[in-house]
Length: 85
Image (cartoon, rainbow, N blue to C red; front, side, top):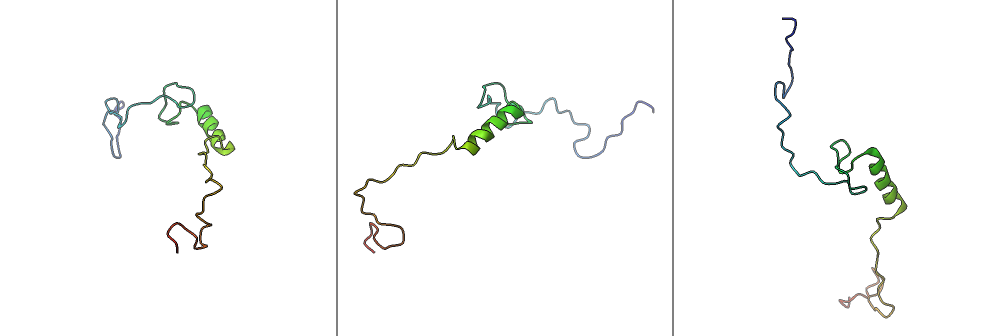
């Protein structure tokens, strides 16, 4: 049989056209285009690199709030905490 294909391995002979994704597709967080499976959750390598650059520059840092100057909590480990130890 010249035109016959041998199939081997797991999943051989199964169509992947009717596979339902586990989660719905979301837009790329950088540009808003449809995300692709290869660069999920981004649409392209470019958008993934833009996001990585933002992380490395500290653009995604969580802002910290400093305690007030009159806070008497003491330094960690000095025993001057709120519990009086």
